[in-house]
Structure formats: structure tokens, C-alpha cells
Image (tube, rainbow, N blue to C red; front, side):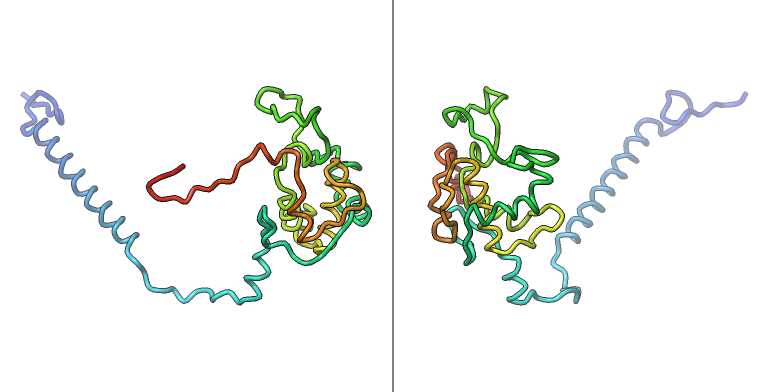
Length: 208
């Protein structure tokens, strides 16, 4: 009579369930040990690989161009709306519209009635520089780093100040003849400014 063997079954396969469990536990323990060893190796400090070099002061300076809300980081330069208008027409209008009304890129110009900020409950409100941005310096920072879309970072400080002045004028935030520079731009009171608060969290055990 032929005896049938079923792995892990109830028949004549001696060392069935108990042997399988023992083997699985051993395999899992071995895998855990290998994983722990791999993690320890990955976290262990490694010697320098000899790749790359330290950035020079000029290279760091070229990248360190962010502008803070209080004006820190803004470069020397100046611009007015009249000076920024032809620059906008040449480098911005094709994407953002002739008067900032929007096109293939975001709408930039427009205010809501009473400068309403009820964006959470009113889907008809427009988000533009004049209705939503809290700091005029952010407009300089973003424009200088990211625009024009096809040639970011190519605008001079004077061109950027001119564009900023033109966009602020179109949004009714500053008069047409106002000069924007590193001293005057941080003083511009944006309509939405009071709807934002600084993030003053310092990290550590307490997060406010």
C-alpha cells in the first residue's frame, strides 16, 4: 500500500505542523537579523567619497537671492510701473494676459469687493497678487527666481522692481508713480496682509 505524504497535513508526514512552525520562526528570526544588520550598516558613518568640492563664496552668493518679508535679501535697484509696463508686455503678457487677467498661466490682477477674504466659503473670489498675497517682497522674490517661465533668473534687479511696481499698480496697491526699491517695497501694505500670521515655531518638544 502506497503511503501519501502531505506537507503540514494530518497524515503520515512526521514532523508536520510543529516542524513547519519551527522552520518559519527560524527563517523570520534570520531575516530580522539581516535587516537589523543592513540598517546598522546604512546608518553607520562613511568616509568621504572624494566627490564634489566646497562651493565658492561667489557660487553661494549667486544662489542666496531669497527676499524675506521684512526686506532682508532685497538687492540694490529701483523701478516704477511705467518702467515695468513694457517689460511685462514683452516677457509676461503671453502667459498671464495683457493686463494680468490670466491666460495659460495664473491670473495676477484683481481685487474682491471689500477685499473679502472668505475664500473658504466663496468659490467665486479670485486669488491674485492684490487679493491674496500678504507681502510685496514675496512678489519680488518669486519673480526674480522663477520668471519668465522660459528663462528664470534672467531679469535684472531694476527690471524686477519695475515689474513688481507695475503689478502692484494694476492691483491698485500703489500709485502709478511710486518707486519700488529695497527700502520702499517692504513698506507696501498688501490688502491681505492681516489675514496671515508669522510662523514663529522654534521646534523642539513644544510646537505652538
